Length: 401
Ligand code: PHB
Figure 1 (cartoon, helix red, strand yellow):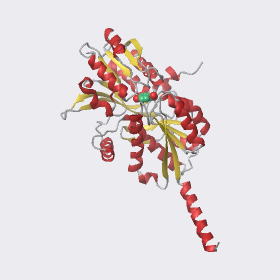
Figure 2 (cartoon, rainbow, N blue to C red; figure 1 turned 90 degrees about the vertical axis):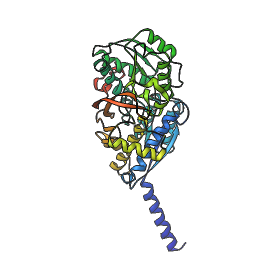
Figure 3 (cartoon, rainbow, N blue to C red; figure 1 turned 180 degrees about the vertical axis):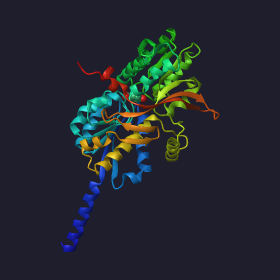
Figure 4 (cartoon, rainbow, N blue to C red; figure 1 turned 135 degrees about the vertical axis):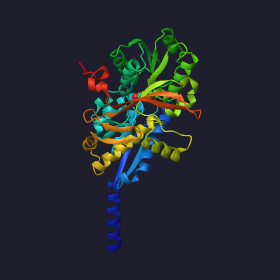
């Protein structure tokens, strides 16, 4: 081989290894098929949009997403996906997790892998206690449900509530959080009704009929976003519960933006608490919604799950820059402790103590606009809300005896 060819080959190898060092691989675990498929698409689009709009912030690195389907929300596939992404694909970070059982089951693998793992939806409070590598950019059920419990008593002047919840960890958190906020302000939860699981949309009629017969001032419902939410609002409407004097309230999961128009007039007047809705009237959100529609179509809309993905990718890019692309797990997590970001939802921060998000909560009412469409109107903003489950060490966050 001539000297020239050897020199050219060496140069090629050197440039390839530089290119390699600039590559960051992120393993994405989302339910691309099954009951959560729409949520997976919304989150993935949020991640992609962040990368598309912020190419300058990513440079000189290239972020590649390695996607794995977590399928049914029971933890089994998600755990295998986490294991394979870490050991075979050798990813530099993990992201995703729509359903809490998936994040709970993945925790031991995440711990062993020692890589940053960004939770972009799963909302059971204690999940971030299960691994020091978890950082959450989404929300917990305590963020919304505790503050809504307080507001139900103070703003809505409700005295009695029935709670119906999907019977798995975030549903139990929602119940505990709402009850704590409501009862410490003079309200009383008179019944708590487990209402099916996350894997299949149940017929809510028997659960809501039981609630209707108890004549509470409010029916607080938690279900995971998606088709569960549409069924909740339709059943509430079909049973004539509003006319019977019971108001439907819940975390914003029950009025997910992509589902809102399909809920019909039964949704009008619904009161929810959440950190995001697509109608938020801020310059940052207007720009985000416009960019989303440009990228994905005028008839599409982002929702709170998309924002979890968008903010999650912003967090990953921050960690990539802070670690100069090395993505050592400890350093990547550390770089996000106290990290602040101007999200489409408003200002957010990662609590350095808990690695969980601190953000605004909005008390919203569903209204019919002059365009004939359903919209979310903000009635009140609660600033810098922390996860009170961990702050107060109560409910599922209480120290183990
Ligand atoms: C969860 O499983 O943690 C979860 C899923 C969907 C939601 C909220 C929580 O809307």
